Amino acid sequence: MNTFIHYHTLDLRIHDSPSLHIAHQPNNPSTHFLPLYILDPRQLDLTHLPNAPKSPSPHSLNSATHQDPSARYDPKQTRCSPLSRVGGFHRTSPYRLKFLLEAVFSLRESYRASGGDMVIAYGLPEVILPKIVDSLKADGGVEGVSAQREYTLEEISNYRRINNALNNEEIWFNDSKTLIPPGHLPFNPESHTPDVYTEFRKKVEGLGIGLNEMLIKPLDTAEVKDGQVKYNGRIKPFPEIDVDKIELKDGQGGFISSDDTINSVYSKLVKPLFDNLPIGGWSSSSSDSGDTLPDLHPKSAIPFKGTEPAALERVDDYIGIPLEDKVGWKGGMKAKHYKETRNGLLGEGFSTKFSTWLSLGVISPKVVGWRVGELLDAQGRDKEVWKNVYWILFELLWRDYFQYTLNPNSSLFNPDGFSSQISTYPQDLRPNPSEWHQANLEDPEDKARRWCEGRTGVPFIDANMRELIETGWMSNRGRQNVASFLTKDLYCDWRIGAEFFEMHLIDYDTCSNWGNWQYQAGVGNDPRSSRQFNPIKQANDYDVDNGFVRTWVTELEDVGDEYVQTPWLINDKSKLKEYPTKPIVELPSWKKHYPNQPSTRNRGKAKGNGKGPKGGKQGAE
Ligand code: FAD
Image (cartoon, rainbow, N blue to C red; front, side, top):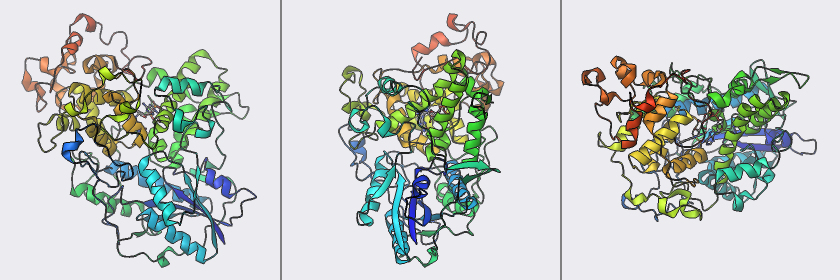
């Protein structure tokens, strides 16, 4: 018996799987295939599982040095705790936990449906993985351990600790995280990733925006059959390994058995989240009894499961499917209107919603990119289709860009972000982190706390924050607005926002979240660091029929359409019920967008489809 081990991290899928591909090459000497996932106490509080390892407290800078931009986190210490460093928030919510468990359990199902199996363990990976290797070695041998290459410090440190524990037996890394793998980039990402996205994109587009040019064909390792994802071929057998016989010391963790259901595991992992409620609480749809996975919020824009079949079905639904002749195309109407509708705020149709699956690697970015390329080819590069469909690649390149901006010295979590490392960054516009308001979350009237709880008195901001808490989701338009509001209007430390998002977002991705937050706070990869969103103009442009604010800020039901975005302007304040009668801040630049100003007289007439204006870049207006 010679076993090929694949350690799953943020690649919870069997389609486009380099490890499955390599393990099944004719010249690969392995005889067995063992996939493994480990729940890590540095990320999740595992207290209620049997023989649970303790979770460490966060390594944090003390509060005095939080505000000092020269104070640095030790990158080797990473974040190493299920609580965040600045706000002390949980690093997951019940919804995020639900998506993670759905992805992990469905991965095991995919392996089982293909004739294999998977080990799900909990504990420190550098303890669990070597134990499994030793057990397999005692019974034959181990061909090697493979994993997806990651770019973030926490994951890199994890691999380093595992390598040390395995006596420096190297992990084989594959590059399946991004749309454009590092080796395919026209520059070395470790030293030459451009400081600005546009430059990055132009260099990548220089490869040629087509199949087998910029886009690389995904590996054909699995497909959906009868509602399940199955390996394309005969999977190598799962080794005979009895995990119950693997000796783990007190507090070193254990294994999820076949009898453990997704609900039983969820109920144990969710308990610490309800024992210590965060500000703003959890979604009203996730009950504190926590015996079963929470229901989706009825107004969720993501009515999907975190599973691999659901992800692949969404790709078929959104982008469509090539017909046998490779010329015809079935479906894809959503993709064909992507750029026009992507800034909409309500419902599943307006943007791809791929991010949740991408963040856990349940779907491969190459699969999405390739399908987009096929649609572009099938449409003969029709101008209208091209404009809309290509934009999906444009956005996926943002995701890649944020992954590649990271290097071993990068300042993803430090107050001054990347700005200190970017020579072209406009010095005179740089915000001074020592002037940022530091949140006192104990105080119900603290600015940052009111932002977190959706109580700023600015309905467009509050609606977005409430959607985040209630559903674990917020549109890109909403994210840009609330981030600008917290950092540019309230001048709060951006890391509170990034941590609050990390807790709630079901599509949380370290690079995309912290990179975008830096960008919005004016300390990231943005040459126009002072850009600021005007929430009143944004509401006028993107929530034309007020449907979004009415969905989430229900206290305003008695306020007429004219003032629902600026309720502080009405005379009869009793109509506001419990809603703040004054906004937390009011900027002079907002006033020209108030009702009955020359700029708002035609409000809703030109753009009255409730889906917002066309296009819209990652920029402020
Ligand atoms: P679509 O509009 O359909 O875009 C397709 C894909 O492109 C997305 O799935 C995503 O993978 C990628 N993408 C789109 N916009 C961006 C962007 N600005 N940056 C990076 N990738 C992008 N995205 C995350 O995946 N995880 C996060 O934790 C996250 N945090 C964010 C925090 C802030 C403050 C901001 C402003 C943006 C954040 N984003 C994050 C980016 C973006 O908002 C989401 O990727 C997008 O809203 C997801 O919806 P979608 O899949 O329908 O996107």
